[in-house]
Image (cartoon, one colour):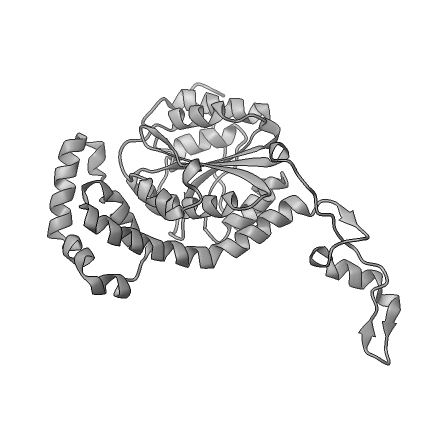
Length: 330
């Protein structure tokens, strides 16, 4: 279990500091060769994030560099796919016969010009271009994506991936993106999204969980429900008021917010989660399932198009949580 759930903060910091020394992490981070040789994986970065508060300043510099290596790796893996999926979902809604070169829909253009194929030159002359209309959209008109992420210790990899995706989406002019992390307090990291290393180093993994409080915080900041997508990433082990949380989620759904609950955003197998509460959330009408990082860009593209996400998940053999009535209901 997570020691933060059982001991006050001063005791936790003493235990962590002792572990930091005994595990040899402090000495490794002080070695110049360590940074060049280390394999910056999710587990190591999660450990560094959880130990941030008790690290000496000199070691924090090296730790940030290690986190930066992982961020660079994940950006290389995920940024392009995410950008393409998001732009495709938002920009490619209207067609034009006078597209810019970069906006030509080549498959449709080729089909529309097959009669102009010149066999002797083995070439096709596209007399009629079909493409996507590039829209100038005001910030106020953009869809809003809010990633609300549980930062309890068991959700470490989800926090890391969600932070990377939030940083990528925040850099795109096609959506407005917010990142909120929570345990028993709410941490709004939206203003830090230009630097994902800063975001990850600002997260404090571990502690209790008050999902209700986080949902309340995010709900109060949604201005246009019909254009809002609320992605709650949590294993649903609620330490706060579960009934209030369910009521808040139901209110968001009724107002038109596109509510999605991800039990995990990671490459790990089937996650542990609160099955009873997950079933009750599903009964509200929100899709509830776990998602891998490679699936997430397509998920967000489908969400922006307001597609049926239950059908989207089923088509990819993603197991959805079944709706379950609350106690006392028929």
